[in-house]
Length: 477
Image (cartoon, one colour):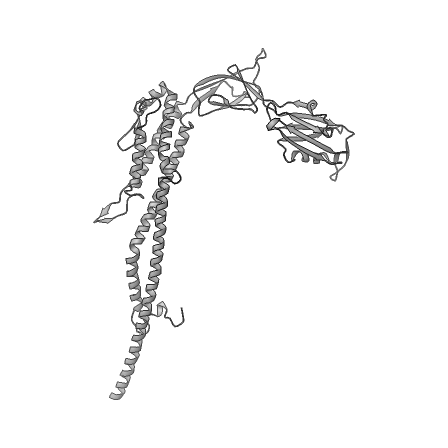
């Protein structure tokens, strides 16, 4: 803007008229006409975006819950009891899986999984001692060499080699082995005896049959001979348990898929009876009726909450004297809510479990508004008669409802498409408002130019009139 262009505050100075107010009023009037409808439409679309986001979050949370139910993580809880005494060293720990059913077992731990452990005493001729910088004694190998370490066999074989330099300290040897590239879990340690003997131990954390540790090369550096088999004090072996007189085995101390419905972990060897046989501990699994009661109430509540959320989002706006009060839900009157509510209701009313019985026979019913309710007496009777069958009913029902919602919640699904469309509309309205603002700026600039000319003209006329009046006054005198 050049220095000759009047500023906002200078408009009308020459004429003495309030031209600034006139320009402001004209721009404001034009702005009201141009922006009002677009502002309102943008605000409504932003509310719609918020409503769609809230709905998607509600359905996603509900689907997460249904996913846990259909996998058996919530409904199929069991009570586990054992004959372990509180001060016993428990031979095994346990947890149920989603396939758990009522059962009773006698279990004993007869062997723990382990990796190989080797020990060796280095010849005094191989090592010498000397004072170190800290006032202690440093032990060093006279002649170095290469040692190869191998665990397992076939496709599972892991191997690495360490080169040891002449005069290496025992700490350097440890570091070389323990931090070697490709080391699959072998640890080297040493103990220097009171007779200055260097005692090495090699331990592998790879447990299970077939995972024996083997060494080769200059193994005498570690006080061992040949492949180290003569130095083994603990072989790699499987863990073993006896469950109901059947021996089971695992390369680790965990038994995940060998006893139906239970994950077992061996903790220590079982005690032995007086006759030398292994003592078995008893483990019993039964229904957790209290958890099932809590679960069913929660299941009904979560379904009803989703429908209530749909009703809240759908709530229509009210009108006063024909004017909308905009007091409804974020998706006021949107058919998406009624369609989704209808779909959820139908997924319940048309559901027939694999048992062939209707939900009502288990005490589960749905009213005309889609709200679920439970007849506790019927449900408890069904649970007493066929607990596992009832668990399956809830798992199957959850799977059906979950699949029904997938059309709405999946990437590129109905909600995503609606949300993308609404966000695009918001962006379009923002562009239109920006164009309107640019138009109003130009409009105001045009007005100011016109009224600046008017102000200048009136100021010139006022000056001329003053001059004429002064001349006339002189003539009169």
